[in-house]
Image (cartoon, rainbow, N blue to C red):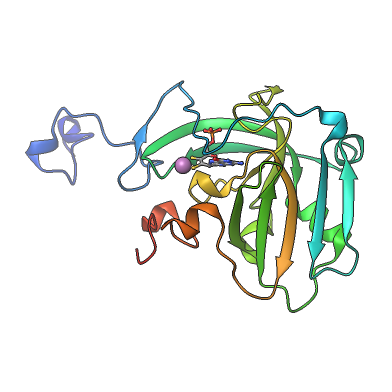
Length: 208
Ligand SMILES: Nc1nc2c(c(=O)[nH]1)N[C@H]1C(S)=C(S)[C@@H](COP(=O)(O)O)O[C@H]1N2
Ligand SMILES: [Mo]
């Protein structure tokens, strides 16, 4: 086989010489590079970690609250991968450290009828998720980014991270997950954003 066609197989000549689109980018997204934009609908709260806590309540066997010290004693878990904001930036190959949401749910014990989660921030920001989308290693509570403490602008001391969905689902300054037997729209979902928000299906707005 002729070696000269290497890299061009299956592409029209129109694409010859253009860099290939990174396959990690969902449709309609661009690579923001080393930047990390801040997108916040409210004033950034300055939280003292020692006074922050995390509650899992609603349809669970044992409603549970963890202090900052207690949450850091749960088994550590990291995410290495990409994040995607609905405003079309994606940040590729980044990393976060914290705990899996599974650890919290395992302790609280979701009731069989629980189907959805409403995440609430200390600021009152809310976002809704199917329970299945925060279980099975798909969601984290994180307090480090690339090895350093998460800044207040990006949700520190602790934010939710649900990287397989658009980033508005990753509530900054998260303090509560409430398990429900129905879906209740959060802040952006009431303002027209999609209830699920899968970037690979471009679920940006209600009806997408
Ligand atoms: N509490 C809270 N969480 C939030 C938001 C917010 O306004 N308040 N914005 C959401 C949106 S729209 C996005 S894209 C990401 C932005 O996170 P970043 O500022 O760390 O990039 O946080 C999400 N979590
Ligand atoms: Mo966003």
